[in-house]
Length: 489
Image 1 (cartoon, rainbow, N blue to C red):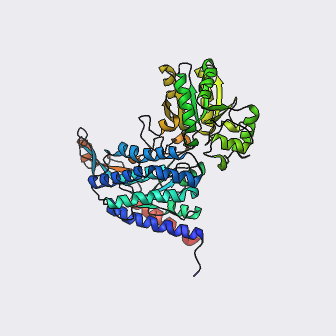
Image 2 (image 1 turned 180 degrees about the vertical axis):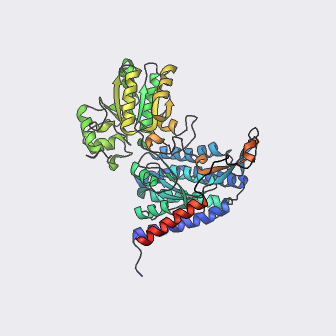
Image 3 (image 1 turned 90 degrees about the vertical axis):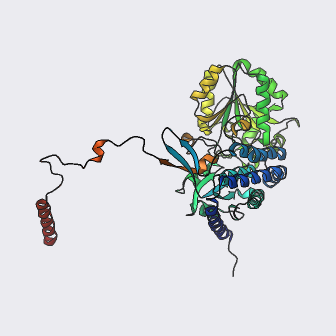
């Protein structure tokens, strides 16, 4: 018998895994809170212990980023994510409102189809497995084709830990046969209950087109505004370090500085001291040609690369000490490729006079490619900070923090997550950081607290002389006329 081709193998694997996950999930759905928490704690610990190895594997397989930084992301997606959801009730009665006499009861969704990106493969896999299993769901991970091995390794590691701690076999899966037909089968399968998509815009669009509940994320063209009131030394250190972190593959990484004119020159000097290399206009033009294709799509060969690697591709010279490359820009839109999202170590630098003018530039950048995602601001003027918070069309605004680590919840109080919603304006169902709350439903058992109106308890009466609808005689006449018409034709 001839061997099945890749698409058929992928389709069959998706079917087998979803079916197995559903069978296991039906057992897991009746687990106690103690059992759920014991399993999740074991998975989180196993992933945390393997953070360095898996980070190195992710970098080697994809060619993206910095192994040490991927280790940190893995530690975040295991330990920090688990600590953020550890005390969340996901079994039985999760809340009782005594004044309204309403019980809220957690109800799992079923099987989660989880799409993971090549940029943050192992950390996103850890994150999604933890929040899915905590909500008493099964999960099937569909990794990016360039990150199959490291994602499969991560999922298998966590699955073994889960079973050892008492979870049923087959609750956690990761596809190894990846193709578009196979991914479509996973997303559209009748046993798939919800889709959790992290990746490029096209992947998210497909996820939202399956007729299933879907959480997707949009692109993040994140501006960072530096106000005249900012702590410039900290702002410079944070911006350069954030853009250099894992070579800028987190979607909340700063993409363009918008500097208030009175402090722009000093900010530039301080950024240079932190390792920012400001390219010449000619060098910037070379970078434009390398980073983006004519249709505006980013060149995948440049994603998650060092400044020196990018410089070699562009045929330019940059210092070995450069941590990021910075280009002076004065416009936003299709005629300025460097105003797009750049998932690599290249940053735009704009200057405008006053927070209102800087606000306009930030909104231009957001509208051009980051609607609903994130914005960073460095300032001490609380009025300016609040104006930015109220007026910007994004759902994460980090204040005096690194974009990469602040938006995901490592250095701020937002919910830790590797999947950042962009809300309705960004094409997503929510602007939240996706976590366990999004993966279980809540049913409500409500007792009567207000007696029904007396009129609702009495038989309804037709007012005297009022007749609704035709009388029996009129109805008989209508029927005779219709029958006669049919016979005559």
